[in-house]
Length: 351
Image 1 (cartoon, rainbow, N blue to C red):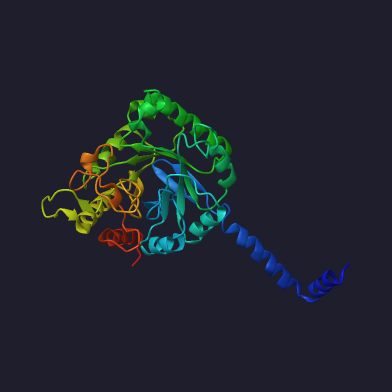
Image 2 (cartoon, one colour; image 1 turned 90 degrees about the vertical axis):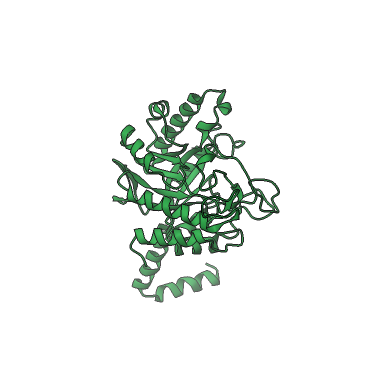
């Protein structure tokens, strides 16, 4: 035995046993911080975490810096601080998060993640190539995971599936089944554009929770009534909200940047959602930061954009895609941030 190793072994012999046990327990606990602490399941209309109903007080999160069109987690620490201050308990991402250290940090902030997969992303964890299974298998035991999400508003794009949206639904259900085979411990969801029709529901029995991107001005009440009449499964609003730019002056809202319009719309939308918690398992409000990459020059904040059912965007009927954040790119809080903070913390009984 070499001298350094002999010295270590001699020192270990004089450390009290209870200290060694404490160290060992501490090491084990440090691993359990990120691995499989809570069971996520579905019962009736509820998403359950450790057997208790889980209400999603969430935000859509796709942080792209100024001048770029690529997601970047360089501001993650600051973002998580802002999220926890606002009472956010869930983030929804549109593509998988690579790197366990990022998921660890999210978990340590007390936040869960809905991980989204696209259909065809050149084989990078997409549904078409089947590589999403690799990601699920790698991270299925991570405590940050709430649900796996397949697709975002693909029902609006039958042209991506040979002109037949049924082909998408068949792929969606098959992918859901494959996830269930390797990970029975997390629900599978999808972000459907508006209320799924009979074809969607009949084609996708393996979807556990239906997410819906819903823009119905500032009152989504009817979606909950409509859902309760067609399904007994859980649902949540995977997107909802308004942007902070008015293309036209309307009612009390002036044309131009208008944080009050966004704040008022989000307040009414959240109030409606939480009044229907017996049907709706919450919302991932769109979105956390403004997205300068979405329309025009990535170096500037541009007006305009396009979205399906855009006439439902409050209060000008226009989706100004780069103004949807509750904080701006510099992480300055908009009026909508304070609305989210008030509503999310009120629903959980926090100050």
